[in-house]
Length: 248
Ligand SMILES: C[S@@+](CC[C@H](N)C(=O)[O-])C[C@H]1O[C@@H](n2cnc3c(N)ncnc32)[C@H](O)[C@@H]1O
Figure 1 (cartoon, rainbow, N blue to C red):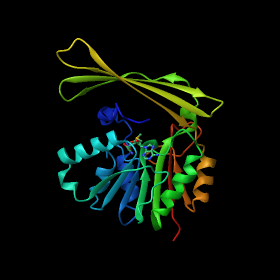
Figure 2: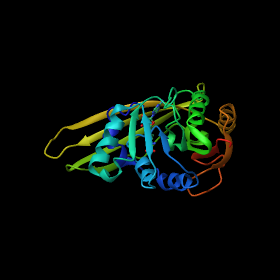
Figure 3: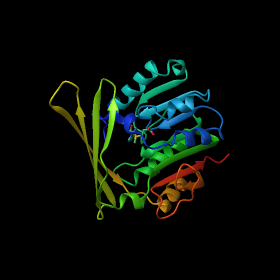
Figure 4: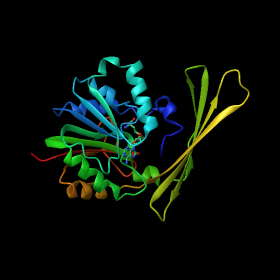
């Protein structure tokens, strides 16, 4: 998904509740922080509050524009400690390492499940020895469904009201789900509303595939959770939360 039209609404529909988890895991590491697929900086600003230099990369200029706008308006005190870079996590080469690398909220989950091998390699290359790599993705059971999510309505600044509709279609042949998102924006004083459409395909990534890709990248699997509160990962878990390490 490009987020070209919906980056402006991203934070209003944040129900992920995973920032505290990443802050806690980052606390088990030392040194600078790198977030792959940083988006609007939702998680990175919380990580930077730990007092550590924090870099976020993303391939969506619109998401990065939101991140920089938030830094200017909400977190000016973090300006010296946060850096946002336009880039692709599959080809990333910053020429330096970090103590903690993370990819919250499915940033690593694209159209092809094979991409995780390359992404994990890039993560490993950017990790200091003993550094921690953590990410979360939608689990296979959450994606192997065709369904329409309940619409969500949010009031956003300027008196605007935005309603988000999401339809998910599971494609068994491709082991992927396509997501169609529609945002309807009601603007005060206008009878018409604006609509913004986004779509993406999300590949199903199994736990054995994650473990194999981590090994390929030279990372040591540490643990898998089914939620951000420390619950076990089972076949019914909607998310897969993984922590790995670069060996010393
Ligand atoms: C669901 S958002 C998560 C944003 C943020 N990590 C959070 O938790 O709020 C996924 C982000 O990953 C970015 N992304 C997807 N594929 C990418 C790639 N190959 N390289 C860099 N960024 C990517 C998207 O542009 C988007 O901002």
